[in-house]
Length: 335
Image (cartoon, rainbow, N blue to C red; front, top):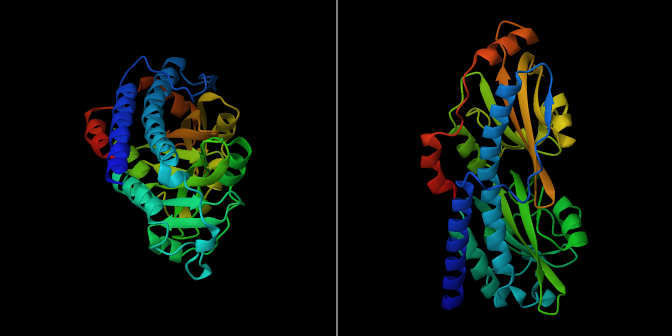
């Protein structure tokens, strides 16, 4: 077991270094990202292009984070302990899965992943039908309010495609927190699916990263899923992991900028957000069979409901310089 654990750790470390290198390489283009399409509504084109370039840099960092987690799960899914078929006879309904001391070799792998990736809340293993086999840490398993997850978007897509999938935001059945799941199939040497390995992503990590950016006082950057649920927020007064955040999807989903992003478009428009005229720059990208959207929201003027004022302010502004030295101090803990 020690050799396997060391092997997993070494590969995770190597893959992390490669991903971090690629993020900082200006010539790198993501294999999951769409080509940028520009959609302008009387907004200065040069400034819009500059903002979109900066959002693409941020997207590369966020995307690489998830890619590292996915790589670790995919490596773990091919280890002998995980490839050993789950034993349905070990299931104890009293603990919503297998006992804490059952199939401990699989749980050891889960604990290694949790130890290496602090932004993962839990590691789970499902049967092919969506029934829970185990949830690590064990206290989360005890708190589960459901034991079959075939209704989840990640189960349904992965069951159809047999490929790694990044979920929309969901409310956890164990903790009640707003989170996302990255799931990968466990496929044996006969190319048969025998289970599903999952990791739940803590949105506090995204909040911390976006809050480390060099944003002006009237500017807010959020990351949302294709339903409008928030995954990360540069506003320190807004916590993306909360149930309240999940329930406020209409705050973003009604925006024209969001609807354009769903169509694969990128650009800037002026529209009302929270009762104020704002310039919203939108940037969608595809990742692991799903979509994420970045919205950069700049209030035009606290006292004006005038889109022309927004354009005037925008034309006079220098580049936001979202990526600066402060971001580098966050990357050590983020990656």
